[in-house]
Image 1 (cartoon, rainbow, N blue to C red):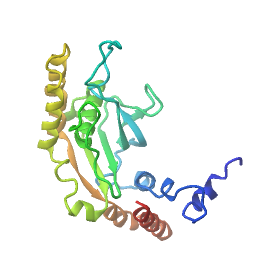
Image 2 (cartoon, rainbow, N blue to C red):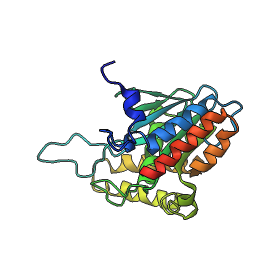
Image 3 (spheres, helix red, strand yellow):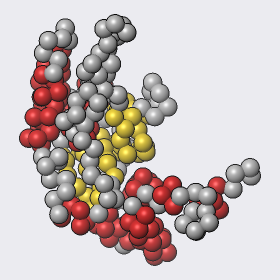
Length: 257
C-alpha cells in the first residue's frame, strides 16, 4: 500500500513520528469509536442510543437560516454566516444531499440528535458577523433549520436532542452551564434574527423564529454527557479487551489535549 496509514497512526505518539499524536488522539476519533459501539447495542438504553433504522455520521455540515444572500460586490451581505459543522449526528437522516457531508432529515424521521465533542476546550464564542452568537445557539438554530427544510414539526419527533460530550470534571465544574441554558440560547437566536430588522427578509426571519425555532426549543432535550459515563455504560457491553483499549485511547486523548 502506498500509504501505510495504520502503522503511521499506531506510531503517532512516538517521539520521532512525523505525525502529531493529536491527529489520532482527539475528541473526534474518540466519539467515532463510542458511536460505533453504541450503534451495535441492543436493547438501547442510553441518551446517545440509536432508534431502529437510525444512522450516524461524523463532521456533518448543517444548513443555517442565516446563509449568505445573493448580494453584489458593491452591496455585500454583512450578516451572513457559513454552515455549522456538527461533530456527529444520530438519527433518521441522510448525508450528502447537496454536498458530500451535509444532511437532510428523512421523511417521517423520528430521531434527530446532534453531538459536540470536547476534551479540554469550551464552546466557540461566535461568528465573524455576529461575535456574540455562541456555538450552542448556532447548533440548535441549525437543527431548527433542518426541521424546516424537511417540513417536519419538532413535535413529530420522538427524540430531538443536542448533547455535549466532555470530561466529567469539566461538566461538574459548570464549564458549559451558561451556553447550554435554553433561555440563553433563545435570547441569542432572537438577537440574531433582530439583526435583520432593516432587511427585506426581516419578516421571513421572524416567521422562521416563531414557527420553527421556538417549537424546536420547546421540544429539544439539551445537556452534557461525560466520556467517563459513556465508558462505564459500554464497558459492561463490549469485550473486556475493547473496554481496556477504549480507556487507554481516552487517557491519551486527555494527555494530548
